[in-house]
Length: 275
Length: 234
Image (cartoon, rainbow over all chains, first blue to last red; front, side, top):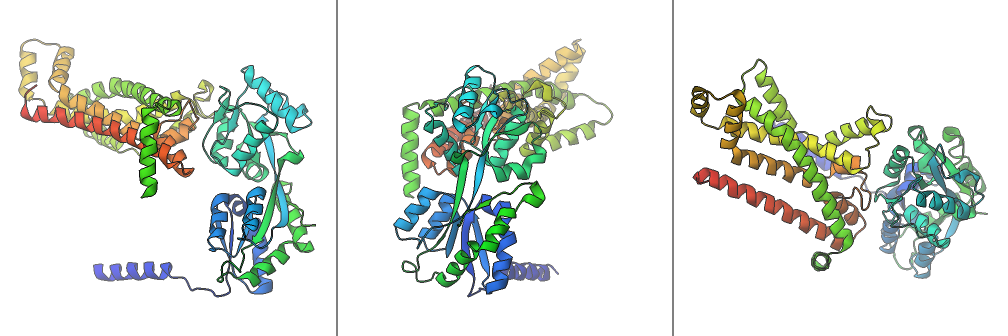
């Protein structure tokens, strides 16, 4: 009996470990936040239906997604790090960067909005109000502090307007992910910067927070889609990759991207901008 | 292997130069875990001694509970403390969440069953005739208890050290209730998690080395006392 159980376990393990290899599969490397949004779950089945190409999505950090591309382990990338993407193409790893869509960052703050950030007309004014209120010991600002895309964006905003926030006693560097940072900010009643998608998906748990600043051009977060260069890696499925690019920038799919999220959150998560 | 060697070298230079970021984290760790240990000792030692000596109905049940407590998953304690101190929770008005106080609460809860359990074992090991002698000499209950704890002091010390070793090296609860805030609630273990995730292996390894050193000292001292006890030359 024991032997039988053992044999069953081992064979199950073996079968699970070996999935049938699919010749026509297209490997798409993207970021965890893109995958978490659920947009790809909506669009990719349509693509698979139309073309017969199965798409394998690998969701990792931005840096790792680009690294996977540089090693030729993916056929196409969908990421949001414009400068790094341009570099990726310039160095010959990708054929071309196509703009697909953007989502945006928003500033959140406590419902009381102690620093009156809601009355500001742009990021400059908003940051200066947070800075002042912080210096007066009236409020805190929570930074992700984990060198993620969002954290780097936040740092660049402070720097852009010459605010030296880091190291101040009202500036908390959490060293955690977006979700953890939002939960902490909700508990502490602190200001923070987040991507809109994560905020909308957790909104019902964040009763003490509200959007205090949004819509400034500086807060845009553009997404690019880049086929990996077949001249560099012969194993790349460039034909299918090109089809996926055309699919994403097609008018009806662009419209779908613009509508995604309205049903669940009352507002879109992404703004199409291929044209 | 290169990563390991360069990490080690960076770790040594960070430690020798007393990098303020590193020293602050060591300080926060030692302070928070130290206070938690004092609380755990004040609660755990009398409780352990009582359970080791007293006879009362349901004693076995109490001991079973204590043994369960000794194996409490720290992250579950962290979750419990988080809910307790969260702004919507029963103790939300204290505003302790994401402060060192929250970590002290969680670590005290994690450590006190260990301290109590080991103390109980040590007290149970004290020669029973001692108690009889003390009572014959007209000692009060308090005096008898104190004399027993004194007799079992090495075991009690080992209990305290074991508690410290556990909480200084715990990460789940500390992350949950402390929030890993730089300079305030960032401790050795949560710093290791953060720096490793970012690929800063050198800094992560220096924290690792410090933590290993602390754990080694703790275990070494424990072994020393236990040997003394075994040889019976105190």
